[in-house]
Length: 584
Ligand code: ADP
Image 1 (cartoon, rainbow, N blue to C red):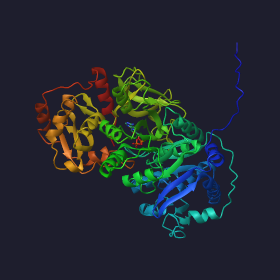
Image 2 (spheres, rainbow, N blue to C red):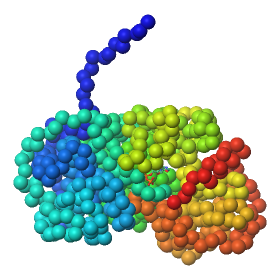
Image 3 (tube, rainbow, N blue to C red):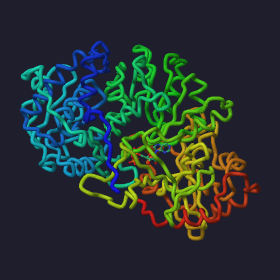
Image 4 (cartoon, rainbow, N blue to C red):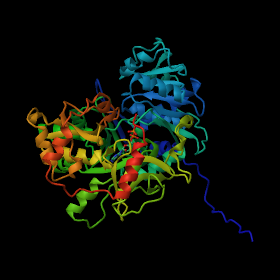
């Protein structure tokens, strides 16, 4: 007998970013958007921005931008960039934020892959495009965003396209743009993976995914941004849509503070946070290492800040403790460009004691409401138990998780049953707390055992004289690979910390075979375009391990300590799997 499907009687309301635009226009007009510019602080409000967003949409239309066309931005975190965040998707086009720290050949690849039609660029970033002259033919128009006055270069041709001035364009348009009816499945924005582990790949967000992700970000047990907050996203607007925070701020009515091109400068961040009474910060760990050092040195504090969202790579315990000591509470989040990016957040359950609390805050937390997670055996593909011991690849599914890449790259990222393979290796405990062990490409394979580069880095960074450390596996004739640490001493201990001292320090913290063969001191760990440790660069320039180093380490280590040792089964499967994962 056929069962009749009884449909609900709710409206088919399309989930689109036009709703966020509606909210900033109707509910949050008075809320400020503040930007640090060269000439000083620029203040505006959502109320003043909305007519400009309408004008911008009119200008895009006049430039021939049609639904689905990609409109690129090469810009700092500013109010004008935020105007583009609204105008481009809400008029039906696709906002493509370009990473301004990429090498020219990566930028060229990305613009061509996305076939961007119009490029909005901060005038100060124009020199970055010089090597691309004649190489990005899809760009028909460039729009220059000046700092205040009209862009001086407007009207000239730089070998890419005619350059127009942003403000002049807006001035010619109407304040009332007839926003089209959008379907929630339409593409709204695209971001390329930052290329930490290979060529960038285009991730295309839909209006629906952005809308639901925004709601996800706003939940109290997620990032929990509210109308009462003042947000300063140190994370760039080109890094996975600034982690979805600009739209979350628009939805909630949060004041937004942008540091413009001063985002990498701890002093500017602290000044802006003080002046604008910022309560909510977000950025990668290396940003907070710099900020903590500046706060200590200057004696300044930020008592108004209630949350420092930190993601992009694991938070070292030493950093979280330092920040706690400075009164800055970090909120650990995990995700990736392909997960919009919010995957999980480390909120601590009620009733945890302080030790338990710190331990849980250092995990990658629990998966956000709306997303499902599993870990799977790399060889059999079977789901592994959540027992805090078994580890395998994280796979996720949900309404804001990618199902493919632009132009069909890397089709194998989706399992047959529709889960996205993240390439991150983790264990999950019975309460759902995720502990990332490593990326498959960074796990060190040593004599049939595995070593977590992340855990080893964290152990080294706990050394009181060390500020940053990255660990890579280098080829070894007998053991396949052995770990080598690249460490940066704190300025006051430069030249005063030795390899022996670091290895001695690690002895009761990691298993014997995890002890690094060498500790190499450098001035700074190279960073990726989004501020993560760049192990590709370290690997490419690494000199081989010196002969005899391994024996020296193993001979000097008398203790085999109690760090997690993997079960024989998971050990061998992980090694097989990681060996078959190419490092680029
Ligand atoms: P890319 O893959 O090019 O680095 P993303 O910024 O999308 O670009 O990086 C996503 C990756 O960053 C994740 O797959 C994971 O390996 C790492 N990552 C993100 N957040 C965390 C975290 N909290 N702890 C550990 N690793 C993290």
